[in-house]
Amino acid sequence: MDSNQPTNPTPWPAADPMGAPGVTEFEKNYSLVMHLTTIALHIVPVPLIPVLIMWLIKKDESKFIADHGREALNFQISLLLYGLLGLITLPLLGLGAIVWAATWVLGIVGTILAAVAAGKGRYFRYPACLRMVG
Image (cartoon, rainbow, N blue to C red; front, side, top):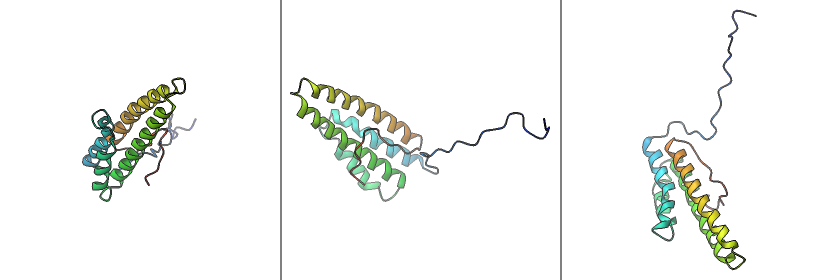
């Protein structure tokens, strides 16, 4: 064995494709709050309004905020559509209840994951999200 060779070579650094270097604490916190507006669904019937307003105010100032706001808005639109699908399918042997339960779980888990990613300064893509706002 060559004595110049390291005995424990370090692996290639893993690239973080969702990382956002240089993001400020304000951008992280603002993005985190946009995702958490999904919780407003329990107070206001349509949580789209708060995230839409927040996104429109800051989308031109920060690429990070623009991306997170767009993603949060698309996710909330998706949840609204899934909820409507549940309402439509409710008479079909309780299928609507299953759709509502799945939508509720998706909303909670997705919101938590997105808020954590935003707080860490990472980009995030929601699962099962219809991306209509570009």
